[in-house]
Amino acid sequence: MRINRFLASAGLGSRRACEDLVRNGRVLINNAVVTSLATQVAPDDIVRVGRKIVKAQSHVYILLNKPKGYLCTRADELGRKTIFDLVPAERGRLFHVGRLDLESEGLIILTNDGDFSEQLTHPSHKIEKEYEVALSKAFDPAHSAKLLRGMTLETGRGKMEAVNILAPKRIKVILRQGLKRQIREMLWKVGGYDVRQLIRTRIGGLSDPRLKTGYWRPLDREEVAILLKAAKPVKRTRPPSARPPRP
Image (cartoon, rainbow, N blue to C red; front, top):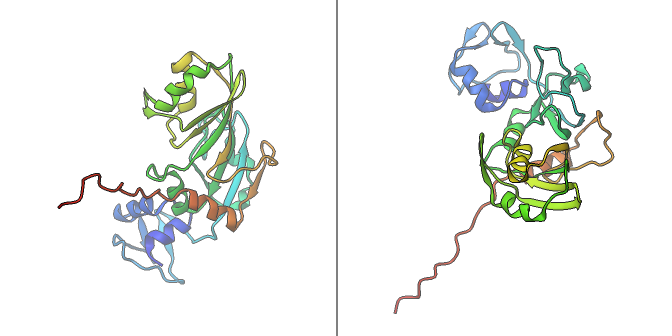
């Protein structure tokens, strides 16, 4: 197994991130520093990153229904609750795929598969994510066009793919982006709406209305395949030429 793939399977991040560990001389095999990405790891090799021995793990895929008030981080210097407090430690070292902010709720995926995480979060793949949003006041349908057209935010150009009104003060929106606090910022900028509740209800083709807040479950192979299919870049076909044929 190539060294970057081995490190990714040990839960150290995507293959690209693991390649940086190798290039920076942080990886040792049998006490010898390796810097070549072509290095192969044999079954009886001892691999260290720094002083820590690392071993390949079976891939784990978890769907968590994040509650409000939990951070998407491994540890918090202020001692606040994190999403990893909700998952048993015996599940191994996991990392979150994308994130939800402290006040947001809903579906988030945890895994130790770096390649899987990179496919779902890479900007070119643009996987759909659906949210239900409760607002401080009734939503004006005239604002939908602006949200769909997009606007400049502090973190970049933000736009929504769909906006549907569920009730006067409740809407459903779909994003293919993941800018920081994007939904909250866009709704405030377009009409002064405060977001009272924000719940992610779907990632790609995956949803689970029966999964209670604060609970998790493993994903099966079919669900992982559904997510990977949704993360594949859409190939655009060039329209036929409008030029008339030559005489």
